[in-house]
Image (cartoon, rainbow, N blue to C red; front, side, top):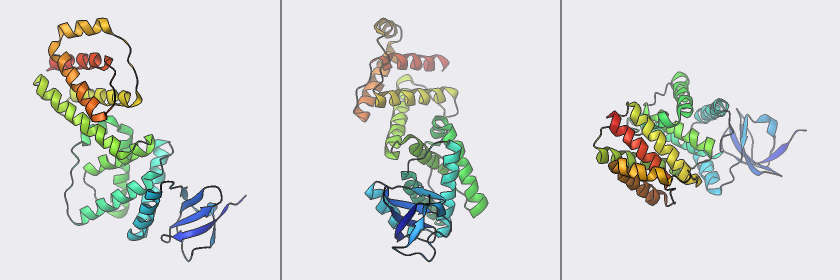
Amino acid sequence: MEQLLTIEKVLNNNVVIARHDAYKEVVLIGNGLGFNKKKGDVISFDHADKTFLLKDETEKEQYVNLVPHIDEDLIAFINDQLLFIEAQMDKTLNEHIHVALTDHLSFAIKRIQQNMQFSNSFLFEIESLYPKEYQVAKSVVKEFERQLGIVFPEGEIGFIALHIHSAVTDKPLRDINRDHALISQLTQLIESGLKVDLSKDNVNYHRLIQHLHRAIDRIHQGESLGDENKLQEVLKAEYPVCYNLAWKLIKVMQNQLNKPVDEAEVLYLTIHLQRLTHTN
């Protein structure tokens, strides 16, 4: 049975906000969907290529204010890319990506037009931690160049990958960036504490950030690694430098994340740090 909605606001020819009895306000996207439409007109769900809800009032207001200032063809293209991302990731994306990624890409294009340089210092880490998101983002960037002639700098792949990861995991982008900053801080402490140089193209660096990322995830989830008292005494005696540095890293994580850390994390960190000293 055809579902009908009442238009609340026409944002442009391709995007309208309509009211539904069950979902309240719904954003409908489709080619020419809003053409010659006005508030109060009836529209069908079937006419939309994409529908989504913006339950957060702040996000809804941001999207309503954002869309009229962006070229309609660009809005349509970005929405095509969002459908592509969802298909490639094979997961339903959190609807906030419609606001966040549209805002980010429109601003990124302005930076390019104004010849503003913007680097991404965590690009290698993003590719290492989120390989699937990175490859999908790479495809999106290629489509921008192929269809619109817009050439993004390489660092933009990383930023788009973070938006994709945020939408797939329902994890706010600010939390993801906070964790990346923490990993960067921890790796600097490790280099200083062990007097090693961890080159980003080194396999040991790759393993380190993977380990730290998993540890931070466990802290967020409140996961326990179990009781390893006997191993703790052995590691403390055999590798005091690595053991003490591991505790220092744990304290930093506790302070930055404001969450308790399972003491068993010290053991796994100590082993990992000892491997670094051995390979270097």
